[in-house]
Image (cartoon, rainbow, N blue to C red; front, side):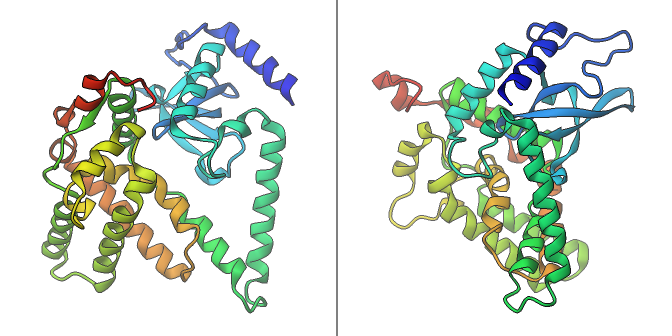
Length: 320
């Protein structure tokens, strides 16, 4: 497996030494080409399956190697990197900073090294899921049904501009030694309230399910923030900002809330829920992301990042 990976790297490396060089028609990547692709703040091994010119811009349909086809998506060239030794080093550096080795859903780096075996495993998983669908009525425990429902929800489409925000957010904190100035305004609580108010005005009345979903987002955020939504450099700031039972959702803003949506699929995989409820929740989550996207200039601003004063004063390294 390792040898085939090296051969692919060499052939792609001949195409470009670092960045992508355009072809005669302006395409930066070709069908069948192995690439590296940004997804949130991380970079994963991928393969270009289709290339199309849409609204005067080349779009690339990529498959993330070793992952279910549900993750396949159309992306712009700014989300892709040539599969070169230089970019592989960059990928490993990102993986190390993100702690990719923890957990199976967040750790794709090891899978990119064994493309064929990983893809075969993914296909076997698909077969198992299909078999589970046929057996779910006969299975009294309902485990297969729950797994199928969770698999359907696991894909949350984050708008491209918000994905770019996640990458920028990672660069500000880990590369430029900056942190989000706290407290943020609007904070997570206020953003959720604004969305609820908008839905109420638009629909005339708000359903109980939407209100419960928003409460759930707030609860997930408060619980997940100190555990999985902070970079190492932000932990000291958290300890200083969250005191006396203060809820993180009243202090932090859209920057950290957006990170939650990257983690939600992993969190939801442990939840048992009826398929209809999953579908309704997914629709609400996607609508909420579009709401954030429409208000991106208000909720997400580069000016809210400031130098990490503690890191600067004590001269800490990148591991802070």
